[in-house]
Image (cartoon, rainbow, N blue to C red; front, side):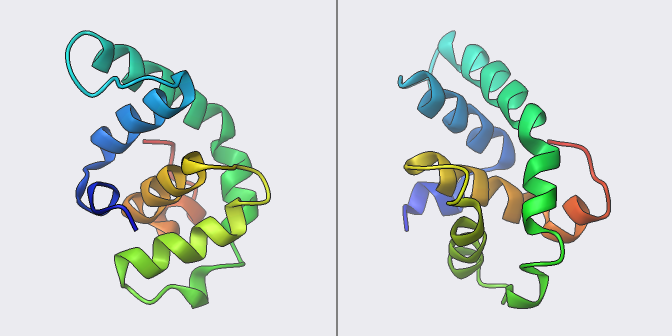
Length: 108
């Protein structure tokens, strides 16, 4: 598992997601805002789909180990998302909180 994925904040992960979607490095400079906006918008558009896929399916499988939990969520989401995006989205979800997501929490 990518150490940066594990140590990044939610905001950093959303910027990373935007960069992956835009296929560019948006971690520095003015591109960071573009990555954050694009990643955030993309995530909001898919948040309900993510909720439907995860709620009721992974809660009992989560162990509290960040890397393992990201992998568990990625296993479910890999039916919809592919490549590095599935791990970034999974990290966002785990750090946000699956319980919070399933209780109706809005996209970060």
